[in-house]
Image 1 (tube, helix red, strand yellow):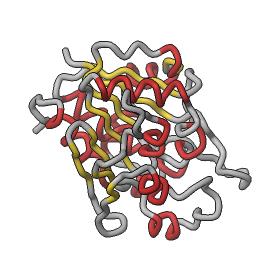
Image 2 (cartoon, rainbow, N blue to C red):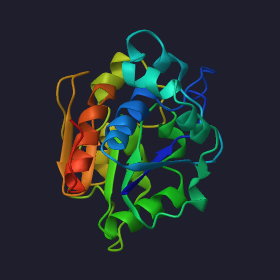
Image 3 (cartoon, rainbow, N blue to C red):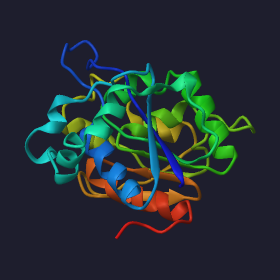
Length: 231
C-alpha cells in the first residue's frame, strides 16, 4: 500500500490579534479522502506533535463540506489526529507523497521549522511528490535541496495570493505575504481568479491556491506519483 504523510501546523493564534487559527479542515479532508479512497495509507504529523489546532472558522457555514463531515465522523482518523507524530520524529522512508494542508497557522511555524525543511528537501531529492495548498506552501520556504537551492526555485508554484489575503483582511496580521516570498525564493508564481480552484504541478511539486483547490491538488499529486486517481 503506498503511503502519504500529511504535515499540519501546530500554531494556534493569529499574530497579536488573540484570535484562534490553525489548519483548515477542508484542506485536510478533501485530499485525505481522495488519497485514502485511491488505496493510500495516510500518516499524520505536525510541527509539535499531538493534537494540532484547527481554525474554528473552517468548520462553519460553507466551509463544512461533506468531506469535512466524513472526516469528523471517522473515529480512526480523529484518533490519528489526536496523536500526530512530531515532525522531528517522522520516518519518511517509504512515503511517496508529503502534503502540507493550509490554514493561517502555517504562516508562523512551518517556515521556521528546520526539521520540516530538511524532511521536504530530502524527500524531494529522492523523488517523492511534495504537495501543498493555500497557506501550506509556506512550509516550502524552509526547504532546500541537496544543491543548496530553495525547493521552489525555478519551479511553477501556487499559493494563497496577495489579493486573497487582502480580501480576508489579514495582510497586516500575517508575518509575510506568501505570494511575495514564493517569488523571492525564485518560484514562478502562478494564480487563477480569487477563490476559484487553481492548482499546478511542476514535476513532483504540486501546489494549490486556496481551499477550493485542495481536491485538485490531491488529484495532481496522485498523477505525479504515477498511480491511479480516485473516481
